[in-house]
Length: 265
Image 1 (tube, rainbow, N blue to C red):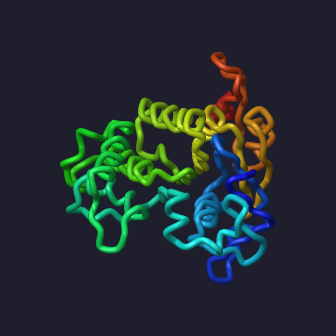
Image 2 (cartoon, rainbow, N blue to C red):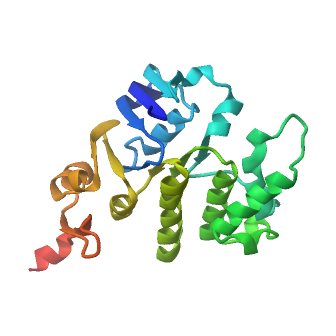
């Protein structure tokens, strides 16, 4: 059974349609990546999947039940969202930020217990942020904040992770490390991950399946070899690229060609 199902779903901000006619399904253990130009609806899709935006048309279901039939707490126990821009109280330590991920598991006026602290510590160890635990969030770099936010999502211990640009501000070694770790969670723990990415090559290398958005709709979807090609990238992003098979694994890799250099030649 699909974990998440959207059928002809559409989302609006006021009167502006941000996405329309979205039909997709995700399954346990799948790493789904979402690419598209700025403003194509990647963040909107993630907000819709977790119920922060209600569809004005179509339907969304979680484990075969309409999403609207779940309480906010139940949704939070099943779906963790890491937004692209998150407000973080500047005087909170990194550990306190990560512990926020345990909120759906706490009762009214209940403080974190040993199991919550352990979950947070494990999440920080997995994201290599344990050394930041006692530091205030306003005293660490942008890349470190990003890894703390990923740790907060992991501490939530939900079966579905929605990640909006999880590799933003990260050096290439942390990009690879975080995405490798997330891919392993899908494979070993059966987690479902939907991640919006700007980097087409990261989407190709780590996505089991890729959704390509353009003009508030799905332009195409499929495996990396079906989706990542020069024609699609030209049509969607308006940029000339050359696509080659990666020498290590054969997956498509896009190389931008410089218009300025072509003119010089």
